[in-house]
Each structure stands twice: as structure tokens, then as C-alpha cells.
Length: 219
Image 1 (cartoon, rainbow, N blue to C red):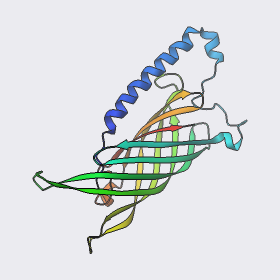
Image 2 (image 1 turned 180 degrees about the vertical axis):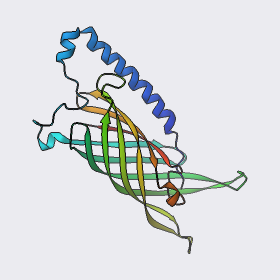
Image 3 (image 1 turned 45 degrees about the vertical axis):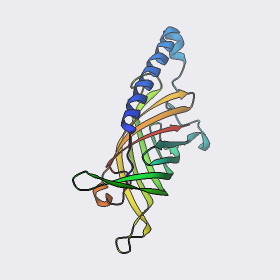
Image 4 (image 1 turned 135 degrees about the vertical axis):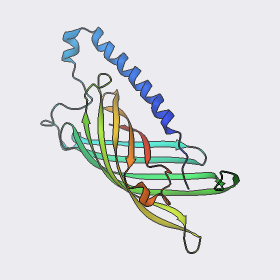
């Protein structure tokens, strides 16, 4: 199954929303006066980890998506730990349920029909993120670099019997993202990642592209 995605347009829409939100938020600080705004600390990242407990260094959250044609639900929780004020590393899981009809085309692009598909995919990953560009597009926002290793289990037809069988494949992602505070301690994250070993598993990789987009919340 190749998942058809429309994430790029949603990413762009969210980027516009976040940019407008940050400009409004920053203007509100400026309107309070320079002295007061300087006394109010930013909370996109801690300036020091010295007084933070183990639990306060934890980064919790999830990436999520709902798609169509075929319909699917993607829920990917994460648990990270702040190693420095800018660097975090952690683990995550992914579960995707899909149900719908997938069209088939010949080599010339002619429609041949469709078949019903239903199933699930699951896996786990480890990741690291490095924040940079503090207050990049507004107060309490910044960019981050992302690196990740992920293993996923998917169902694909056997090359021998043609019957469905579950197969593991791995992906190595690198890319950039942007995070912005939605409230104290709650952040919206959007990222675009490139799968550097996509060609090796493109026949069983359900993403259908070496580039993936993610939306998530962390706190």
C-alpha cells in the first residue's frame, strides 16, 4: 500500500498560522513595555538545566495524522530527555491503522480498478533533536535539526505465494523542523524529513516518497 498524502498543504497552512500567532504574541510583549517584557522569561527552551529534576527534563508528546484514500489514522507517541538546553534525545512508537480502497493503474496510467485494503502498521524509533534559531519567527519559537532511526512492520504480498505476510524495514531520517509555544510548556512541532535509505525499501515502504512531513505536540 502506498499512502497518498496531502500533508504539504497542511504544513504550509500551519506555518502561516504559527507565524501569525507568534507575531501577535511578540507584539503583546512589546506593548507591555521594554522593562516588563525583559523580566518575563521565554519558555520555548530552558536557559539552564542546573535546577531541573529528572522528570522536568523529560519531553513527552506525540505526532499524529488522519488521512484519506485510503483512510488511515497515525498515532506516534514520543518520550525524550533534555541532554543540554538545546539537545534532546529519546524514543518513540508508531501505530497506523488503514481502511479503504486503493486504485490500481497500468504502466500507461490507465485506471484498472480498486481493491479494499485494511490493516495496520507498527514500529519504534530513536531520535535526536538540536534546537537553534531561538525566537526565529517570534517569541517562544525556534528551528530544530532532527535525526532518527525507525523500524516498521508492514503487511505486503509474499513474492512466492502472493499471500500477505508481515515484513520489517528500517528508515534513517534527517531533516529540519520548527516548534512554537501554544501555551506555557506546550509546543506545536512541524518537520520535514528525508529518508536517506528510501531506495533500499521503496517496494515495501508505504509512504510512497523519501520525504515525510510530521505534525505533533510536545510538553
